[in-house]
Every structure is written in C-alpha cells, then in structure tokens.
Amino acid sequence: MVTPIDTGTTDLLAELHDDGVLVATLNRPETRNAFSGAMGRALGELHVRADTDDAIRVMVLTGTAPAFCAGADFSNGSEVFERSETSTFSACPVSPPAWRIRKPVIAAVNGHAIGIGFTLTLHCDIRFMARDAKYGIVQVRRGVMPDAFSHWTLPRIAGMATAADLLLTGRTFTGAEALQLGVASRVLPDDEVLPAALEVAHDIAVNTAPVSVAVTKRLLWGSFALDPAQVDRLETELHHHVMGEPDAREGVMAFLERREPNWSMTVTTNWPETWPGPEDVL
Image (cartoon, rainbow, N blue to C red):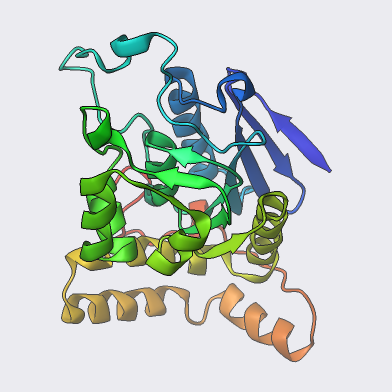
C-alpha cells in the first residue's frame, strides 16, 4: 500500500509505503527537475516530517526520469545568480538538510545531477548512482561557488583530495568515476537505481532497530568534530541507553528464531534525553 503525501507543490512528490519507506521525487521533468525554491522549501518540510513521524523509517530521494536534478533553473538567463536579500539568503536552500534528521536518507540518483542537484545528494547517508549519467559541482564554471554545505560534506565523504579536485575544477564525471572517487555507494544502470535503493530502504525499515539507527546516524555525522576519547564516551553512553531495553532483547530473539523483528521502541519516545534532538547537531 502506498499513501500519497501533499507537499504543497507539484515540484516535489511524496508517498509513504506501508513498510515505512518515504519516497520523495523531484518533479519538474520539463526542465530535467531543475531546482526551484518551492522544491527546496517542500523538501525541508518533508525532512522535518520524516524526523518526527515514527511511521517513517527511511527516506529515499529521487527524480522524475530521465534526470535526478539538472541544477539551477536557467530559464531566466543570467538573472539566476543575481544577488539576493542578505538577511534571507542561504547557500543551502533545504532546511534542515538530510544529514540533520534522525532517519536514514538514501539518494537514488537515477540520472544527471549537476550543481545544487549534486550537492543535495551529499546530504544523504547513502548514494546509489546511475553508471552513465553526468555529475558535477560546476558552480565555479558559472561564476559562483559550490553550495549546500558541500565544503563540509564532500571532504568527509570522499576525502580532501577528491573534494579539491571536484570543487575547484567544476568538472563533470560519470557515475562510474563517482564510485572510484568514493562519492557513490553503489553504481547501477539508470533504471536499476531506484529499485535498488528501495530494496535497501526496505531492509533497513524492517530489520534494523529505529533508535539504534537514529543514534548511530547522529554520532556518525558528528564524529568528525570529536576526538577518539569523545567518541568512546558517546558510544558508551549510547550503549547504556539501548542495552537491556526491549529492542535489544527483540533483536536477539528474532535472530535466534529466524524471523523478522518486531521493534517496539521509537525515535520520538525513546530518544536519549541528554542528546541533541531534531533541531540540534553534535
């Protein structure tokens, strides 16, 4: 069963599958899903919903075929990068970004992703990419600069050398090279990207404990600001939070009895009181 979700705009479609997988689709096919302000606002609101709704276990972000997102909308010519009001402008048009929410987010990058179209994928936890599609963070070739936290996300995902290569040259590359560079988690033919992402999303939704995944994601994204002793302290603290709880028992029994687990703990009701919530980061 699939339930449509009203995002307030046709630029972003959303549906919740009965296994807890939320699928968000960038939807401006006439422009190859070029990014719009309405799309960014709706995606941010959907992130908030995914974070706080326990019926949602995993989110998958994709685009209406044959592209993922062509980047900025150039329909108004050179005006696309005119200066915006300083007090309201942000280089990241999606708030909160996907890495701040407590549910896993998988990017099913089923076609070309350029500029903001690509930097948005770097917010996601896992990236499945199309082997022959064209990708690039091309902003320096358009007289502006990379955006959407890409100076923070890309070095953490793929290392400083790769980040410098892609950010400073603005060159394009294929999905096959993205895998070599460590940017892609998996590379597949275009029409296999979304099905593969949905398969992994379903596996996460069914077989992993919600609170265990949520605290793991929060610590993982915050770990680059921590030293080993701090990581050890937080891992220990979080182990004490989940050990001895119903899901820790259920996970073991489901494994021993060779059945799917029946998780009872939720992110909203069992989140550690001393830990950052959806509006905070480590």
